[in-house]
Image 1: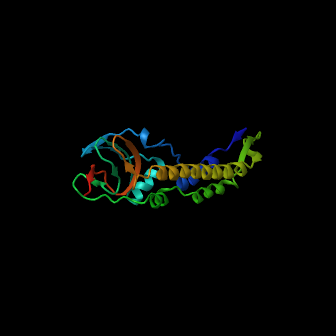
Image 2: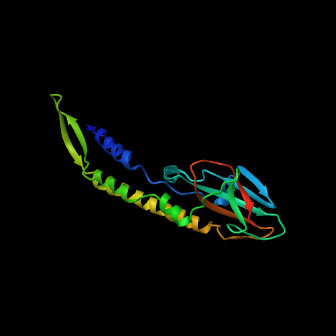
Image 3: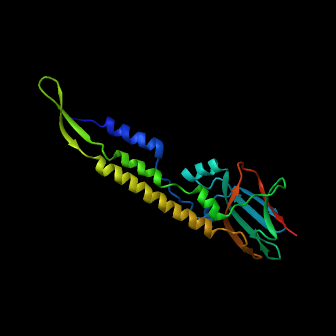
Length: 209
């Protein structure tokens, strides 16, 4: 008896070529980031890291010219600051950083779910088994409607996975939105800052008068 897996595999690969699989979101918060860059300004220490997103989120960053940066700011000065008011983020060359609204960034970077409905194209797929008769001719002995399970399960699974990942991503962008956040003396704050940028330029803090 022979089972024809070739057609089934071809169908799955064809659909995945256009859809891929949903990406998870497992950053775990900016406090867990492996900060590789740092700078200091007037008692404020800035640690930051690009490339904190992965999978489809990272691909959408590239496609939309957006970078989500994990930051850690330590205030060792003798005064309080407010991020975005009397202390701002800028490039090391003095250029201003275009910080995006966290919800606008989310809308640009979230995973789409409708695309995974294409997995329903697998629904009509059958798995056939064959035997060879005494004359060496193959005959179909059984037809299993595997697509009835495979198509809906792959579509539903990816839609649920992308929705769950998007929910976590949105919650973290909101939770670690530090625009307008106080940085009191002696305190440390963490943030996720979406910026409109296509490059990985060095960052610093600027004390605003």
